[in-house]
Image (cartoon, rainbow, N blue to C red; front, side):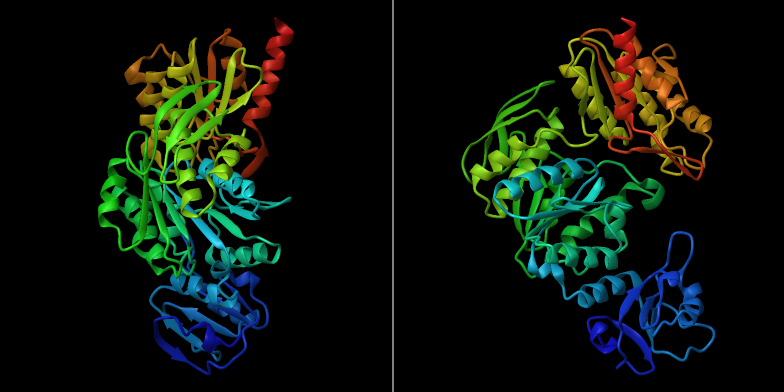
Length: 492
């Protein structure tokens, strides 16, 4: 494809050289550049691609897009733009012939619930007899092909390439989790969405966004900028029970809107019964009443079900398929996932924010007949401001909290635990234990639990690894819980 065609939608500040050159690939990593590649120098969190322009030329780059003119003259075409991340997204969509125009595309953003909602929507679309791809936190998948997810939402070039591959393999729909990082870094620019969903907003990723206002501003870009640019007359699906989102609805540009809530909105659940055995509810919707029966646990999963139902309706999927899709989904990996036979109850959940942890423990507290034990920690090299609040929440809402390591990464695990303890100690110094070894923490909680008690293991969910230092070591909360239950049974 010619460079001139690729850059025709960009706001070019300056261009140098001949634009009628053939581009065979695009790269934002200098070490992936080969002969004929267009190198886009994007600013990274640690290093700026601008400093790798010379290396990319040495490797065979045919043209450069940058925010700054290099200090040393270059003898290949050069394009200067204000925002190379935005430019990368726009030219990537053009390079892969705008794949999002050829499918029904659903984007889900929000602090909590994105993954569960994506699984529900996927199941609904499958029940309607359509081929659906999913891009999200756990993996990227279409049919039997599953690949690991290095990030919730891929970089824009990788995203457009993935969408094109999914279409080639038969995808008619794609459901995508859209992270705040992706919105801030322009990764979904150039995607034409049919539906955009926002589940809720609570503090998260403040190590990156710095404050709640900037975090919310990143989320709002999906509805203020990305959805309105879609060529498809898109829908916005909004949770009315979240006060921040109720205000967002009032600010929306001209897109179609469908709302949901427990007792308000177009999709609501006036009749509902929630237990450790699952959810039974009757939903009221624009398509009529909908009976829900699912083993998924918790009120927040009812919210996810309502969001998925609203998406199904907005896509024109029959209520029979919506009902069947929700019924068919019995498990989301690491999302209130039940381990063992319920004696005691053991649940593994991804809750890793203060809000998610509080909701998870409160929900289990409300449903459990016995005591609630919670095992949790906080990730290293991430938002430190949530550590003390999570310590306070863990001790406040459980009979016993066991504070342990999560993914400490390059931080000292004991230092992270000390920061969590600041919140825990203020509630009660007698209602928590510190066991830095996560395996031993899980074993202790399950050993202490009696019949009808519930052990809630949070923070890592579906993850099958633990990051200690620079090492990614095999570790799965679910496997460790199963082993601990077996040891308990053998000892009884």
